[in-house]
Image (tube, rainbow, N blue to C red):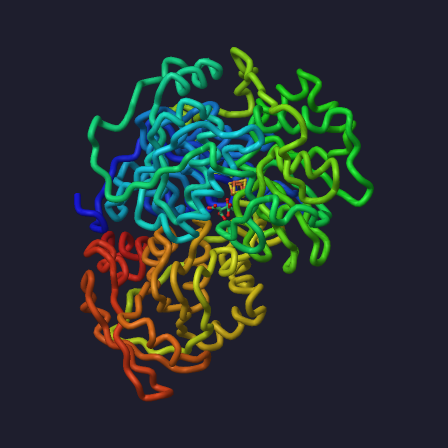
Length: 625
Ligand code: MIC
Ligand code: SF4
């Protein structure tokens, strides 16, 4: 197992949701798998929930029927955010989980190897096939000491981002060790594991210990426990130490999660909106803390306070304890148990509005407001700031608040529908409303390509830049022709027309191209429009795999200084594509300037074959004909 070289791992559990599951299930069907072959596969409905038209309801009917037919669990709307519900009800120490969502990493909190991937990779894993990834390096993060009152797990996640940046975790698994772990509950570990993806890491893992057992007991799942920890004297590729006691309350300022500063340095900024929730900070402990800070206070007139519980279990517990009443009395708007504001499904702030959020990404435009100013903070900082209407350092707000979770949470899985028995599968018809479009078919790579440079972009391009979030776009996740109109729409609203007219095209990027979400639509829809290659300095792992899955060449500059000589509108040509091999260099001719430059195709043999075939589905179709 050599870091960087491709390995295949067996997958025990999978998850998809209503933004990625439509494609995953269509692809599962196209791959002709009869039934899921995993220990457990789930479909969650949490992203795509604002029913302003028939689209989402069609998608949900499709997903529910596909779950019945193919043997998946189906978590209905109202049950909660996939990662929160999965942690509560299904995550098992020592298992592998592959999820069509980048924050699948949350499962690392209980010692699960939980990895995010594109929907097609998850469809393949659902069929019982291995998941391929570059062998990770392992970075040990040793935690010592304990957090001061008012510094929280979110601040640890932000401190890691401050140190590693949004690309410092690339190619790595972050493994947490050290005595400081004994002071962090599974819910706090989940916040840290969740945001590990923001460093570009493959995932994060925590040991499974007595705190894991206590967590599983509260969920009535002690039978799922097994102890797991790093071997004595284990060796690591890299190591860092974090003294928990030295972490102040932190904030990630617009527009990157690694733009981290102490809250004290920015305190006093007037805030228009505060949004508490998302898969990072919507647990029972988080929201009980928020309720206890806000109890007896009224929010100021200029402020909108939004609270979205992470799961139905959390919501019920808040209601049963009167905490919901405290939040309502303070002036909070209680939102649906779902992702909601986190990826622009409602609650977009006003123009240039300042929004403090407990979520994990503050990318430009992600809130649905192009110039919205998103600041990421802990629930404690958010709640104390809500009292004053300005960003406030929570220290000094009184004694630390300690929330003791109940011995046993309310356990009611009635919104999570188990798979139909295999004997009934044949009788289930998959529901395809008009929003469910057929998968586009792609042809094999020709010997040579020439195409136009459609866009030249900088470093850290996010998948939100490629395919923006937001309710109206999310509603089109099952319809590639319709969603393709939004590709790069925040950067160039005419991109889709230009790309279609150009026929073949290239996009030029810098470092860490495609960071952020797992949405494979950010590869599939550009390919549908005619994008043939992305030439960048480096790629984010999930997006690179998605590009290959749909037959787009992910090419890396041999000499990054060549990038400056390429302009939008230039024509580039590449040849020898039917002979592509793993790791090979290719010469790209700039037909406009007459200059040539070298690029590298840093993929495995398996991926080179897939690229030549025009992507994985085309490859499978060709092998059958
Ligand atoms: C996100 O947080 O960006 C999302 C929306 O959950 C995505 C999934 C998607 O866009 O399909 C993710 O993180 O993978
Ligand atoms: Fe949902 Fe936001 Fe978490 Fe993505 S990051 S899964 S949109 S809550």
